[in-house]
Image (cartoon, rainbow, N blue to C red; front, side, top):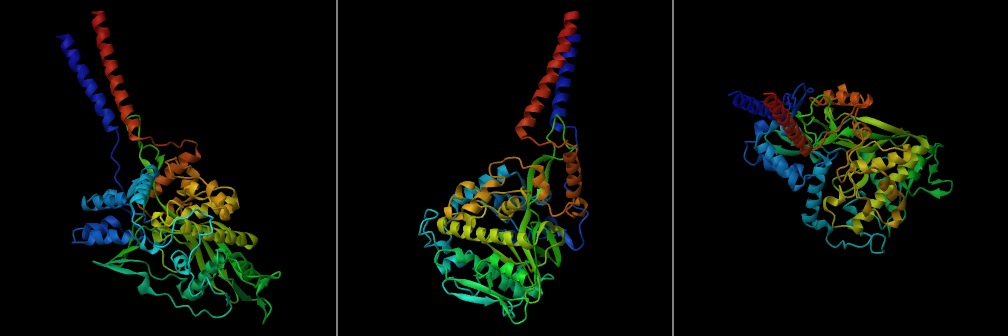
Length: 522
């Protein structure tokens, strides 16, 4: 009877050990929904009300699939299906941490989409050729698909005076917003820089056109700025015409303008949505494979630190006697590597941090490198028109170009993720910037990102300023662990499954050892 009772006790202990291993001895994490900043709601709150409206979910996904400023919006078929599943399944917690994947999980979906994406009709007639060959050039029409030039033609010589009043149109609210129905608007209204839209748009187009002087077959284009001496013009620099972007910035500085170039970082706004007059918080979350402290144990996987994808861009803030304009540069989901205006209002939760500020010769050098990046991407478009998403992701995302220049200017790169495939950057005409892209860390095959890049990408160093529910607490705890040298990485599910199995087996072995010892004594 004692042997039978001992065996029953053994089975109970083994079952208890297995239960403890499976449960992890911890509470299930509930994604916070409060507190929220004023005039802002979560995406899940909007979709709770609207997902039952016929056709609304599909209309929303279609809009998001078209990308946008300061948004990753790279919705591959797998991500589209994941988003749809979470909405239709009313997985509101999952929706507010969408997709929450590691880069190892994101990368294959992009590669598959690249294989099966249909050819862009706009690219018909652009034959794929080897980079650097004479045929790797574009017509005027083809070039304008990837570079905004405004009224300035590639095949005509011209000189533009930036000291004359701009005749470009004012900010157009109707063009920046789309009505989706149900009280939902996509797109943002004007910000404090919008009144300078005419000058800013002209400056962006002129900088793009000056960069395009390096494209094969381009006619000579130049700029002029009135000098600090009344009635005279800065048409040249030490006898050279103003024919490059860096020439123009140097001329503006010489003519009495202040020029600040900032390396600016934001949380990327995935949706740019507004619902009944309120901003809709919609970040795009990535798993950093860094463990949030004290959220796991031997039996269970620690909760990974999820962070919203950030957006990085260079911004030119110019003030002076003739030119007052603000423009930015980044490589976007539209496939364009170019200078752009920055006149729409960011939602409060995206924040902003200027990681670096450049003036004088450094501002001129950053401008030169951005001009080279612009030309390099145009060469890539001519050589590889088959790339899906306009080359976005395969040739990098917004961070890659900024990261490459940061590495040149400071000796380090502090942005995550970088996705450019180094093997594609082989055009000898672009050797300098190819080397810059190749030198930065990559996140294409699932390497665990360095903590300084994860934290460096954030739009603030004061984490309590972050208004995304739950994120500030996770960042404070994880950053403190990193500074104390106690940062831990998460492991895959197989690791924890194996750990649970080993613990259960060890418990069983211990129990049966005790039973055997008792029987031997008897």
